[in-house]
Image (cartoon, rainbow, N blue to C red; front, side, top):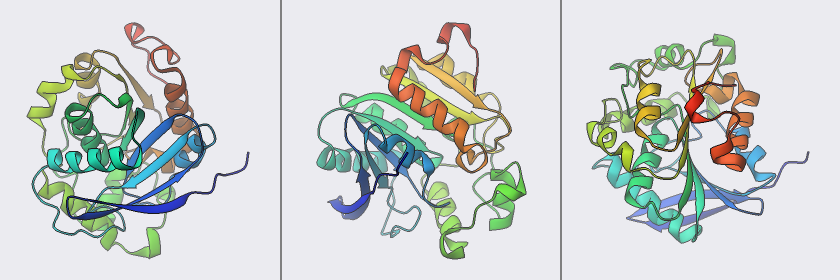
Length: 262
């Protein structure tokens, strides 16, 4: 299976110049990502069957921090405008880690274009209090189950990880979002929440809260993986997300059976 070639572009929204890359054809999948650990193979896998647009959230990854301030909700509004400019019409929305918190607010603020939602390792609900602080080495120990799975940071620069941690702290990404928890029942699109079984950034109760409060939702637990699932179990993550994007409500097992996979 050949890889799709992603082309790069930029869109100007709310004073930010937001980088995006896209490839593939078909139904649209919008991905909010930081690329702090490099390019995700999930992007390439989905681009085999869909039009995939990967946005770099302002202040994350290699993007300029600009004057990112306010709240996660403000950042979600910015990303909703960026998505509308680049991908008018309906789409599936995917967010990873702190970017999944942004995706949560995006679907709450602008539900109409979002047909399905995938949250990978979200931290909006029941985050561990010190999960967004510490040295880069301490952070790696929390984010990964196996030290050998830690990829090199782009250009080997630990400041990239530190910058993302600082953004999460500044926008409240390290504390439980009571407001978003109270609105989870308003999410009407099909939703998948994916956690690594050994994720140390959120409390174990987080998965059950999403499943209980989002009406049309499934939770997938990836075994032998920590917070950065794509680095430790990439095939399992790709299989789960790809299957959900294709099947949605008929995803492997029904919500009512409460069976976790893969």
